[in-house]
Image 1: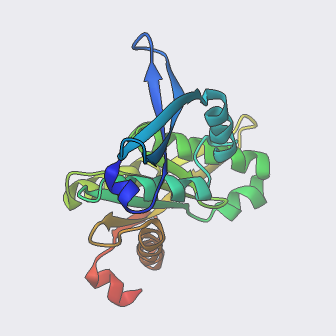
Image 2: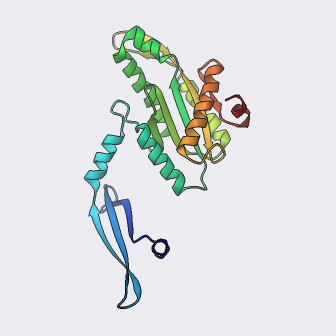
Length: 229
């Protein structure tokens, strides 16, 4: 608090989750105002708490894609940069997934069928990564997953696992079926970038390499791949 005050800041704000029973959590906000008192020549801090649970829930609803439940691109960028800022010593992986030849599904069987395939596709990603990671919808049929990793080899195994899991047949209620697969690009923090935009650009470059190799596979960004991007 004193360091922030010495830097010229006199208002601090912190949002956090709290529970009164250990099971049900809600959002609170602490506002702290720092001031110097000439009377006792000391720095004081006045704080108050506010329940902001409904505000946070509204923010969350606005940040989520209605079809998949994934975060929007803007929300994903904000959350990822926040995580990187809070854990600069960590190791993270940024995965981009693109549904191969997705236009075929919409053109041949209609957008309703295409939407169903997107839901199946993203459910596979969600089951693989879980709720503790950032899952985002970057565009129509392009998605991202971001989370902590132990090392590069783990990211490679995860990409291979997902490539196999996303190579599947999407079947609609009307009997239509379409073979679905994914092109995947992966960039790693910190070696491939230290913010969302850089990691996104490099993962997208790795994704492009996957498509050049024939799609339905994955590429981990590296110096070698960089030369071809």
